[in-house]
Length: 505
Image (cartoon, rainbow, N blue to C red; front, side, top):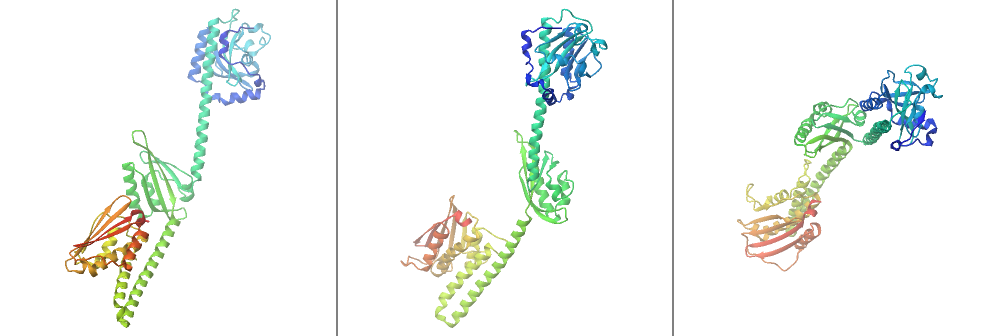
């Protein structure tokens, strides 16, 4: 046996002394999970070329395991392994460079070897060690001849063996990197699955065609059946009264590639029905084509019950408040009969109470239907002043806006005051007089211009009565705005500015 080192041997790392312990070396070998590379076409091409390069009948990629040497790819042998005790490669893998045995019958280590005395009757062996990046010897790329070779391999052949051994290690390393990537992906998927299974909602995904391919564990926990595979399969889980809205909304969102949101009652594993909030979003590619859908189903049954109870309470309060208005109006009417001198005050109080009652009915009617339109509120307030049912005396034009229940009362007080003053002294006090109210949206504010037309000439009294203070307090204090009144030849022009935020919250 001779060992000939050339500069090309440095293409492969040398064995690290740390791996004298075979257990540590075998752990590194196992990290490649090399069994999957049996009959690998790339390794097969390498050994075939090695056999032709060195002009030998046998070439193998051999990995030395605990009890055997495993041939991942080979040329010239009809076996995939041999016992480790007869392995040449277990010696080659610990050699710094190419190991050559030029005549095995004359080498005391191998003369009695079963592979020498019996098939395949090894005489010449050349093994280039396969060393991992950590320095762990794994095995060897070997070439074998049944005839001795006193001259050994040529320099070109030795260099070729080193290059081919590098190619073998690149293939093995690619295998290990692929395994590491697969493990990393599996770990991430495992974490993601645990996270998705941990959320309280039912979570799902569907492909671009609307086929559902994933549900988290909440489906089984809550519904107790196999998950649906398409949209129509959901029908048996959704309450019959909610199906039309749920399915029409989904089909529209699916066709348009838009977000989907709806509420419906869904059958649970115990047979009960619970209100659910369904949300779905499309995920698109760079060309804005829908690739997948992701969605959640959230139990909102307790919220729905709370809202229902709140609405019941609100309707009860609404009924009681209307009764209070009726009682106050009734008391005022009774009292004025005993003290006629208070009739003007009682009449004005009654009108205010009726205006507030109309405002209350508008924002919280007993039917439970909440209206939130500024124009709607004003139309209801001015209805008593109309020429006829189809001919209002206060015409409202321009923008509209949402109003809150909180804002309804001060708005009702302000415009009731303007209307009653106009009915006493202004345009609404004459048969032909009328008022225009123009609403203009100015971004954060609304400008409301009250213009009286066709009434008697009016002028400022110079006195600030309760009505004036009420206007100022309501507009500046509760509506976040201001009021400016101008007395023209044709009548009063009142310019109000109110905060959109104040009237909507």
